[in-house]
Image 1 (cartoon, each protein chain N blue to C red):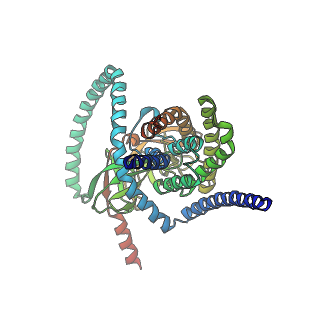
Image 2: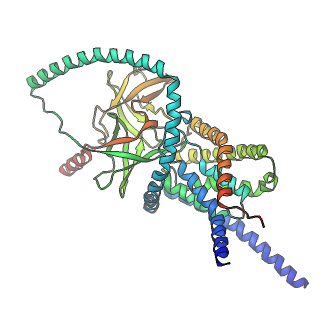
Image 3: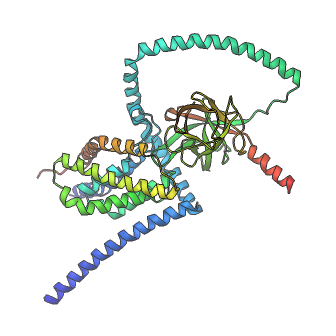
Length: 174
Length: 286
């Protein structure tokens, strides 16, 4: 009985921290010093993918606090403008709380299209903010490359996140 | 009963209002952080330093499986082109043999002329080799983090890879050095076209090909011209190889770097100590 309680507590804890932990891992993936030819040395915004995924699937465990944490972590790790990542992730949060009802429970294709549309909006606003900050137009090519990579990788990343979640947190049949 | 229900509704509305207020406050916070970043706040620098120290070991753990996957992909990919690569390498090897003979002759000639002129060579500089532990390459920033341990690394030290410049040290954070690459939007390096001696500034724009700007309008620059440091800023010594002109489209000159930034693993951090020299000169003038 005590063992069951302990197991339940541990499972519940893992379930609670899993979204933010995996989102943090996703964010760190962006900074790996590895070369993948097809990426042309431009990285997709893994943090944005994770935020979209968790806000859609586990908004009860991944709320505004989590988004702010990931945004601040991005600011701390990135050499880019501090606060720009947080701004972009908050934008995704606002878009998601308004569109979650429409997107949840839909087919994967609709969810994917949703990511395509929302991440494009977020990245363009982020680009605009950076352009104002630097006082000059930033090249759009790396941004578009990063966007396309994010879209291409979304199915793979979301599949991996589902697999990890299912591996670590399983409902026992009674 | 009715009163309690109405109170509950009020509380719920209050909660929603509070949530909206928190969200708005977070947006304001992000804007404040951006403004602080523009003013190069020391507090943000401190936070970023702490973040790098914590994240670097985590990234090193994640690198291992990621490298296994990418190396396997690269190996399989290279197998397709092995014959083609072999033919190219043979041709290149023949050309290099010819160049080696010429180089040896020039070396001897150079030594004889140097002795004749009683030329004083530049002192040997101190350097360290460091392994790259993290990299940021996206539409907004191009930097790397290298592990330097307890070695002395200063802001502005030149970072080389395969003998050519790749960037400069921005700051040392405990055992790590943050390096701004030449492709980063904040990078501006005074350069010179090697054969025509035309001066300009190599400006990063977050693409793989930095731009050559502030060159004279009538400057004769052609594709293939070598670009080296001019040494004017006092940060970089003169004559360090950077890259070559890869394209000129509508007065926009793009430069391809000699070093492959996407394949960096180890870098050489060189301290030419020019910064100290400049400070001494400034003191003398005072």
